[in-house]
Amino acid sequence: MSRKPVADDRQADGRRAGSHPDSPHDRHEVLRAVAARTRDGSRPGARHDDLRLALVIEGGGMRGTFSAGMALALHDAGLVGAFDAVYGSSAGAITGAWLLSGAPEQLNGWAEPEYANTMIRPSNLWRGRPVVDVRTLVEHLYAEVARMDFQAVLSHPVEYHPLATDAHTGLSTDLRPFLAGPAELRLALRASAALPFLAGPAVELGGRHYYDAGLAESVPYRTALAQGATHVLVLRSRPAPKDLLPAPAADGAVRPSYGSRLVAATALRRYPKALHDSYFARAHRLREDEALLSEYDRGGLPGRDGTAVMSVRPALDSPKVGRLTRDGRLLKAALESGRAAVERVLQPSGA
Image (cartoon, rainbow, N blue to C red; front, side, top):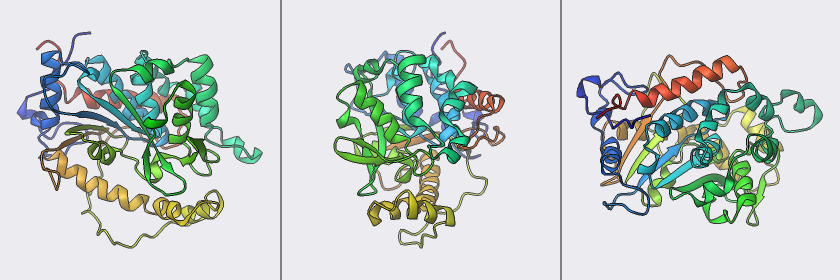
């Protein structure tokens, strides 16, 4: 398959998946940077610019099927080598690992019922076992059946950064420093997706305990920026909200749901208040992220001079996929919807 350079067709504004009508995706600085590197044949370790391009992949359980389709489209277009680092949260960390594994076509597994049924087992609730069985997914399916080349991920010239939430501080944590080998990588994948209650206890890695990255940073663009990224492409697993609310006040009241309070009082009861507070603030942070990422999509650089961030989202009419969806038909449609979302911001092949 030939490469697909970044689009420069200004007439397509407003028709991009997940964009606002005034969103200039076709001339966004992130796309320009990716296009320039692709055109120049730039590769990790042999750059001709002083930029740092990061690919950020959102989590969300089986909603990650959307961002998996997006990652596949980037691979098919020959654009992965334009990035310096891949950051992933939860399901996004899994997708990022497959993208760098040497067998990115295995991302199609997100749409396979076997994949979903291996990970999501509602009957386990009555057996006292995790409903979301990430351990079996990583340690059995990925290690023995649909084998992931863990060493290829670790040695890939594009840096891999899986994120998780520190159970003692409630802070988003980059697990890259702990990736000493395949065993640690598997633990990092499990930690990044260790949903409280649904996926069992926190995962221990490097002497610390970690829960799902989404408790602190479900869209890990902030970590990418904090680590020096100048250009960030974000693969989202949620369509754009129909009514974008303004960013909440920093000191706005957090009103956790009954379900969140129940999880905190049970699954998280052994951990400090800092973790509970981070967990309760998820909705507040997501609303803040939506407002900020929307500004970035319109080309604004709010408070971060010289940085550019662009999101690719599923279309508003995409199939309704939830965190625990197992319907193969819906998942296949979600994968293709994600693939189409990226393809819509790229030109047809040939230029």
